[in-house]
Amino acid sequence: QSVLTQPPSASGTPGQRVTISCSGSTSNIGSNSVNWYQQLPGTAPKLLIYTFNQRPSGVPDRFSGSTSGTSASLAIDGLQSDDEADYYCATWDDSLNGYVFGTGTKVTVL
Amino acid sequence: EVQLVESGGGLVQPGGSLRLSCAASGFTFSSYSMNWVRQAPGKGLEWLSYISSSSKTLYYADSVKGRFTISRDNAKNSLYLQMTSLRAEDTAVYYCARDLGGVVTNWFDPWGQGTLVTVSS
Image 1 (tube, rainbow over the protein chains, first blue to last red):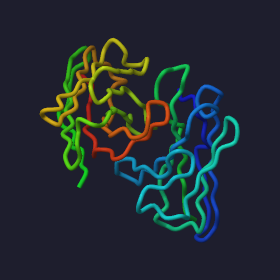
Image 2: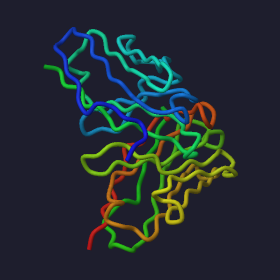
Image 3: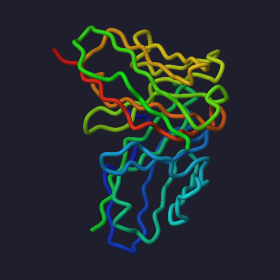
Image 4: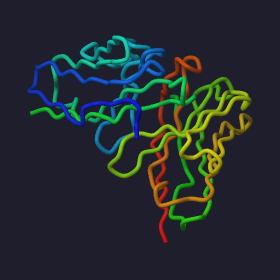
């Protein structure tokens, strides 16, 4: 059972903005930087956002991250069909002394 | 090109053992910490273990502590996960991933393609 909670699903039409929430606690999101991973169907996860709102080379600026207190959010602007994937938040947890992933959110483009 | 390739997965009986390997290329393996992450069929991601570049620092998830052992051979550019006392709930795709950033500000990039471990009689 993950300590980071995400909604199981989110959806939008092409061009819309979709936001995914990630709820944690003071020992994880409240203390450490949050990262986001994208997992396209049948593939390995890929780093999407790191250290709150940094994007690796090649990740479009349609993806952005933010954090407030013990919660984090991933926003996808200008939703595209290629964005259909599972998205996971993640961070270090000081109490567990380990890395923790969110429960995951499946994004569907309608 | 930075690349990680896992191997060693397969079918194993409950209570059995298996050793996974992760071959790294395209970067100075000895300079980076590494991690193992798994994903049960149809489920989310679960972090399992971390090893520092020198192997001095190790971390494990409670779910595998005492049963799994992470190790590395920097001369062979390889990461390992020795799994013992395997249970049906250990059935998953196992990924290795390079660790970037610091210990509590870390992120994983890249990931390998994964290797499937099935624990069943």
